[in-house]
Image (cartoon, rainbow, N blue to C red; front, side, top):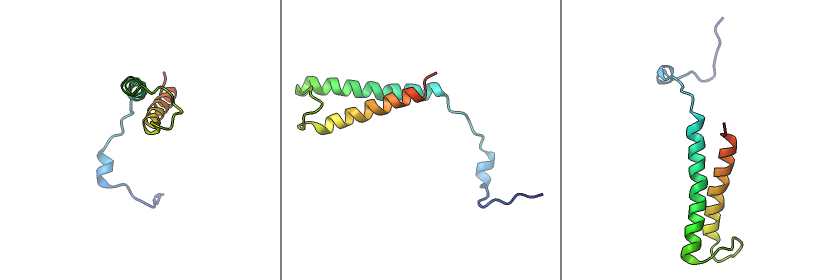
Length: 81
């Protein structure tokens, strides 16, 4: 019995083997994101003297910090051993 598919696999896709992505590499990537967010916040605070996350003056810098730290934390939680 032949199984019909809506989209057939391309000839190039048949010769490529799928490799499992190591969890350790993903964890280290998210750790680097987290550390980049913390380091960015510290450097920004020392250079401009603004440590208040709720001040509207530097909202863009704090948005970058929150994104980096947030994705880093969620990624580390998802890929922990």
